[in-house]
Amino acid sequence: MPELPEVETTRRGIAPHLEGQRVTRVVVRERRLRWPIPEDLDARLSGQRIQCVERRAKYLLIQAESGTLIGHLGMSGNLRLVPVGTPVAKHEHVDIELESGLALRYTDPRRFGALLWSHDPLHHELLAKLGPEPLTAAFDGERLFQQSRGRSMAVKPFIMDNAVVVGVGNIYATEALFAAGIDPRREAGSVSRARYVTLAEEIKRILAYAIERGGTTLRDFIGGDGQPGYFQQELFAYGRGGEFCKVCGTTLREVKLGQRASVYCPKCQR
Ligand SMILES: [Zn+2]
Image (cartoon, rainbow, N blue to C red; front, top):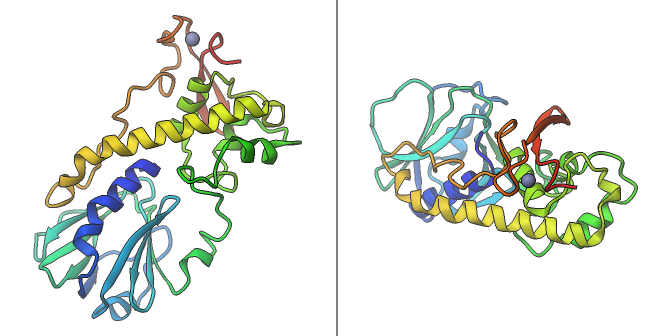
């Protein structure tokens, strides 16, 4: 599933080819994504100049003159640029054709993604209640500490809650908790301020590193497969249940927290 670093890498990959371009036509071959693509998307977007491509959480915001296309990659979506008229393969549901002769092509085998139109995207129901971006100053350990007081849920689902901070998916939550030495089962309300400061720093470090690594794949957005190279960083805990801890050699344990597999080291994480 595309996580925040992959979405940010996608944004960086497509933005230079979209910004300043006029849309000539929108071709929708399959409307049934997680929510239906608006019937009038072609009418709304054609003739419009794209002003910028931004990101909020895992939503891409393609801002045109009269509104914004909100894109989400769902479980299996990707966006890449192809020359207009490139033959269409299975699951390639949408082309947004540009005056440059390139088209932004949306592919999504499982169709859990979304393409929606909004005049006020930051107040759209999907975005209005999102917490801070993890890589901004609005997110830090003090905020985690304050928000967690009195919360009895485990710390891992707490930091994966989009109302607390956006974009910390299972991989990044698992790895950040390992790096911070915090047991993912611990009650969110019982974690100290100092440990939340460490945890927030590790979340920022790990996400920033993944985005930096994604930057090496930017050229793949033209003609390539639009896949910004997932999980390129070395994993200490995620997906390693039953294997040995790379730090201390103890066997890593796997539990379910908030319906998600959670791997941790019983010795390194307290
Ligand atoms: Zn260990």
